[in-house]
Length: 97
Ligand code: HEC
Image (cartoon, rainbow, N blue to C red; front, top):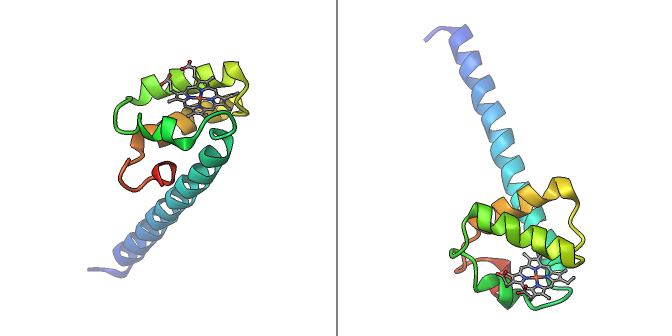
């Protein structure tokens, strides 16, 4: 393996791990945000019961419905919240404690 190729691989793997770690950071920030924002009117149990049940688009319309009721989620954050909920595992989610 030549040096240029090697450096390229280092750069690529550094690049990927930054995104990987950022993804983790975002996911846990999102967990805290959802836990705080979505338990103002009802318990987290209500959300927990739907984890692994609703799909991404279903979560998006649920979140939009909650925003219409008064949930404090910025419009640009709705998609992210929906993705987080669609990917959350009921066995390990903070919403199911
Ligand atoms: C302003 C108060 C309020 C906030 C904040 C709120 N909800 Fe709700 N939520 C409600 C009410 C009222 C109901 C019951 C009425 C209904 O089912 O339409 C409900 C019901 C639900 C249900 C069960 C019914 C369904 O459509 O599946 C889920 C899931 C849910 N909320 C998720 C969330 C999530 C996720 C958030 C955070 C983005 C959130 N809620 C924030 C008021 C709120």
